[in-house]
Length: 184
Image 1 (cartoon, rainbow, N blue to C red):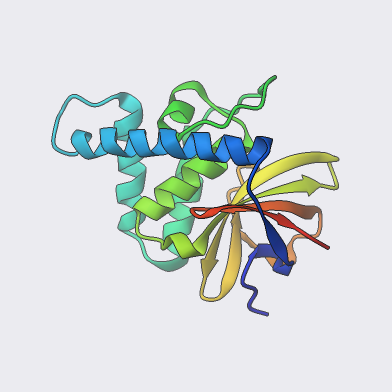
Image 2 (image 1 turned 180 degrees about the horizontal axis):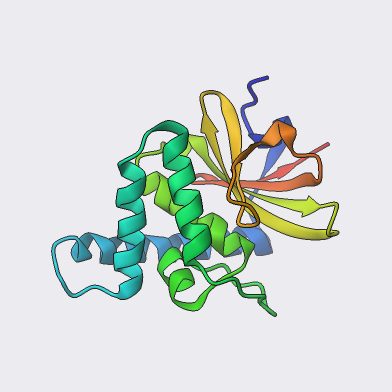
């Protein structure tokens, strides 16, 4: 089955509310960080986080197909310090590398790194879902590869196709165009 969105469920746009505002805000911060990294490519005066993130992007670019996804997934899972946030703040990649982050911060960093490493924005998503095993919400990066949606989760090093995950109930899907809510 080739679904247009991860988890193969219909969605409708979300144009206001907390999640929408968080995504708009983090997109602004990402844009600023990408400008910093562009300057960093030609200037030796870079933050350690920018050097690390650019290194992860370059390593991803050096691979193709699923190896690119795996490279970025593993590198960011190992580079970000897991933090349990008391207030849910969505952070851009360099800030996440500096301070640590929770699941959506990992997903945002993977989304940006993969886009910068050459994956089309049309094939990248962040999915906010409910984990029925832990009874909590969680966020993952999801990438369409060869018509299949691969889940890049900070809780595991291996990638799993969306149709093979049973304990995640998708709530929202986010891409470069905005936020959509899933419907059953």
